[in-house]
Image 1 (cartoon, rainbow over the protein chains, first blue to last red):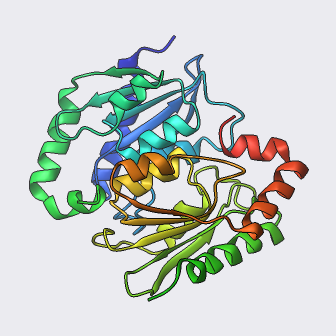
Image 2: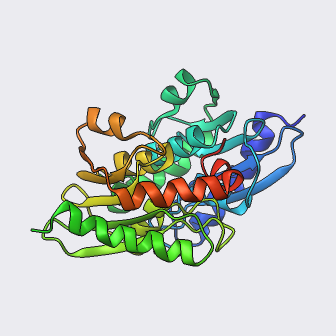
Length: 147
Length: 147
């Protein structure tokens, strides 16, 4: 059994990788029920000039084709936007662990209403990483969430 | 001014490309307000072994980084799943034109409730393409929508 905090550490590591690459520091990881890491990734808007790769999308892609996600957990450093919340709902990902929802709140309450097990942590590393990034690059952040 | 039917033709062409490649025949395209094609694409689950690329995602990606989507129209051969509906909502894509919603219904009514201009056509080419595909490859279709 892997704790929510342990799983979050993997996502935080991904977010830091993204930051080091000059990208938007959001990371995510998809875990199997037994704690096996299926895939992890981070936002790639800047690095690959690709607006379609959010952290959750990247982790989902890197997990490859799976037959069923009900027993998996998506861990992300930030509350999932509607795009990523839609991913979770469509593929019936069973649980979502969120580093923080202070700097941005997406669709995690909607997911909870639709039966996804949602855990929101209040991780200071995640909050400060996004707070600093948004202050330094407000235009990039607005672009990433379509504002 | 480009008609919904003209725009749909581009998406149908993409779906046919996907079918010819052995893939799931769903196509999409993103148009600017003046009718300029920004990007088009098709489902790539089979071709690239990538579960994250639905038709709408592919079109969105191929349109590159844009600063604002409110005046754009996403055209797709099939009612957008929750993943792709979430994409439309997060990036404030202004309008969605749908070839058909008979073989599958995703989140297009939810999008309409949230202010997206939704047009559902009843295009026989789209219906028959999906009907034939689902009959021939039920397992692939179930995989693509997480069932």
